[in-house]
Image (cartoon, rainbow, N blue to C red; front, top):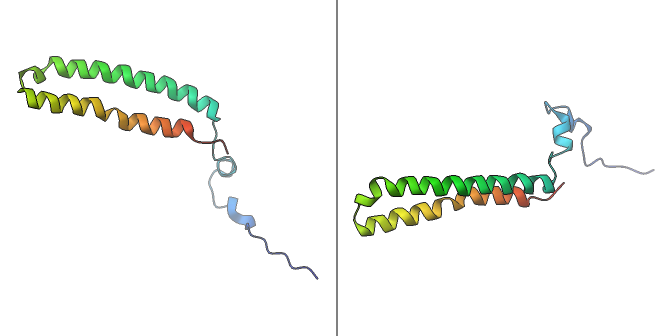
Length: 95
């Protein structure tokens, strides 16, 4: 007599409100994510460059030189955080 042990309980999909979403964890293929992510990165870089120019033409000109350096270093490095999240999302493998 053979005893089978079921490692996946049959009721695992009954508790979820949308069982189809559990069956397909990635609803978008990597190719589509890369296209959307590339467009999002371009929009982010253009927006951030315009924002940096707006800040540079504002009150930053009136600051002392060392404070200007810190402001521009901050503005030059902060855009990397959202870009990193976009790139991580783009690089996720298909299920």
